Image 1 (tube, rainbow, N blue to C red):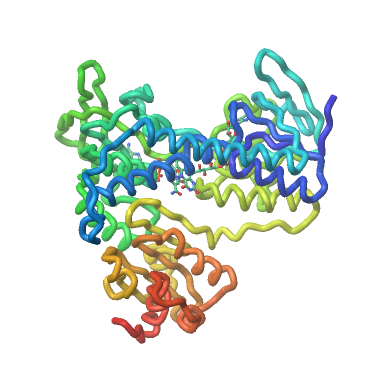
Image 2: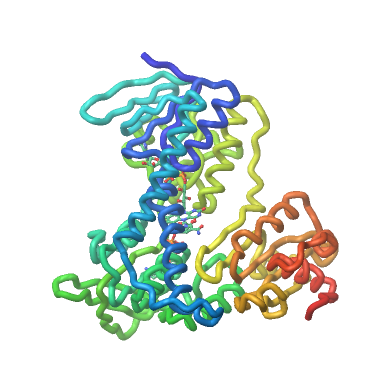
Length: 466
Ligand code: FAD
Ligand code: NAI
């Protein structure tokens, strides 16, 4: 029987990164994957394919609407959707091969099949009609998450789709109804909007992007509305009738009341994700779950069974690839006897639309609720030279700092390239930096990042260009 120091179940960004780090630390490692390809949700049906389509559709949109004003005259672009899907697939394949390469390079065994924990130190791997049991000193559960479903609305991945189906539609729907104004709804809504769909988003709450800073969400909603998004906030879809040629969705106010029927070609259900633990044998192995079905862990990723750990989407915390990766590294280091650690106060979040939205640290709402006295500095891209010359001035940067110590507590951006810009704020916050530190750091000119420096200057009411 094969025997390992560590068996990782699941090869998403949490699992494969954990395996690599453990191998670097000298452990004999195997990964177990039930999919035909490595890389998990993120590489196959999540982060990467969505970003490929966001990029391609943005180019399409730019060619159609932005080139002419810059004096670049081209005939109206034509959409070749199969070619765009092929571009997406090439991106997926390239990244998946990259993970295969990393497994080989680090001498990690890849065991294809569904993993089941038989108890401490034993994992059964079954697939293709075969089954084997491997012995291991440690197990890491990195089985990720699955789509949350709406009762009574059957996802067929053709007309009523989850994010997975929405990444592979074979034609642009005339009308797309999205349930949930979260990250997936706004990213994939952007893709199909740019390619020609009429997009309506039905959101249960009275705001979009819950969890993001309220002011950012408000301004971002206005920008999306200018792009043609229609939002129905404070509303819910209670049924979708798929019997006819078009779908008929019943939409009601969230608090109940008169329902209306909305006709649409495709419905995208994106109301969140749930931890995925099916078939893992957790109950039989005595591994405890929390009240939301997530694997329960302590501060060191340890589950209720000795030698079994869990990381990523299957445990508490934001369901983000980089959070899963960092947990993978920390968990491997802890197993190796080192002091692995994740700073949950500094995990950036990005919505990869145009413009992008990014955030790290506390929102104003969170600071108010916690009773923390803070100062705020804001700087709009309309006053940033580079944004002006490129005529991409939507959005602003907001820096929130502790009123007493000036330590930066949160940075929130809506604007082009916000996803790249947020990293300097994350580094600053990781080092406990102040708004003054940020304001006194020389930023290259002309860059959009100068807006961060200006927002930090604005905390001390001394922005130069405003
Ligand atoms: P996963 O990536 O879900 O991987 C789990 C793996 O475990 C899967 O391969 C699964 O097949 C395998 N598995 C499950 N059970 C078993 C078993 N019993 N035996 C063997 N294998 C098993 N996050 C970002 O940070 N940025 C983004 O831009 C982003 N975009 C996203 C877009 C979409 C459309 C979606 C759906 C998600 C997106 N996410 C994004 C979230 C991101 O994909 C997840 O946070 C991340 O994949 C979680 O990593 P993980 O390793 O915990 O799990
Ligand atoms: P989400 O949690 O971001 O948003 C779900 C939205 O649906 C919320 O606004 C919620 O209020 C709403 N909602 C819930 N029930 C509803 C109902 N019955 N009717 C109407 N609205 C309802 O979840 P989403 O967009 O499905 O994404 C799942 C997760 O995947 C995200 O939380 C994120 O962790 C990850 N992700 C990250 C991305 C990124 O980092 N760029 C991109 C895509 C996904």
